[in-house]
Image (cartoon, rainbow, N blue to C red):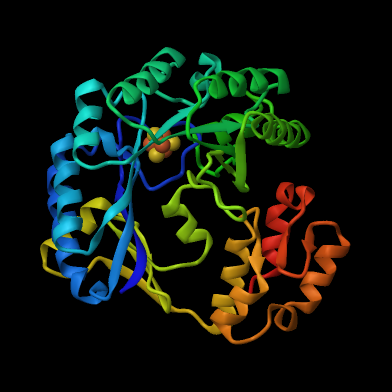
Length: 388
Ligand code: SF4
């Protein structure tokens, strides 16, 4: 069987954060139950098409999956086990936000087989959280983390955002130092991107808030790299770090890396269930309808929810493998590329590689190519070069 990842999208949140343009909606509580029923039905509908795949990771993301009763999330996990081939020992991650979990719900998630919890903490300064329009404060965030440990989670990721309007490097350092003192297994640190149409972007456009400072943001990223490196965390993807352990392989991502997300970066197959979920079977990619009510209606009529399907050309597949793989600190290996596409990377991308190496954004050795530290700051410039 072909190994693959399984993603389930829960597009609901208690309120919309000021910077968020993800497919997530507040105020759709009346749809929750029908949505979960549709997820169970979708799993059965797509199962024949995905019969040759064995899913060794499951990621329930959102939105805020933990706005749903745990029993419903458990039903989704059970369906993935029974209808799709969710492998024994699969990594099962659930995203949660502080304020939507308590000890009983966390304990129930752990007992339902969830192996990894990803907490959207975003900051440990109340002023930052208020600016971002988050519903929780630092105290609630710390409590959620403590409760998750007490509930038996031994693999916890904490998400943070930096480069906020007016945020200083020392403030970010304080957040990072407190985060490190918690000793999570994994940290995801994202630079704020201002999305058009969000309240935060509107405030900045009106001049109510200063625009994020790109130089400060770069300094915050470099500070994170240095601080996390000194604190025993391996930087394995542009925005992701995992705690080093004796189980780490000598080369490549550490043992505590997110196995599910590694599939995306390695351009491996994954199936997405739910509104707006994307899938890639190694040949074509699919996108489900984004609107939760439309998704429920489509599945209710016994139809698949796919709104778009695109068969990738070899040039697209190669370009995406480069763009995604270069997000990994290990980069892309020549041998893996050639084994997959039957042509040498250095023949396909000779010009792009030479230019990017000259610009100091890419480095190459006898095994493969990877971003330089400067390339990690200017990743989008590098990725654009590989667009077909
Ligand atoms: S909790 Fe996450 S998905 Fe929901 S609105 Fe906030 S940023 Fe968006």
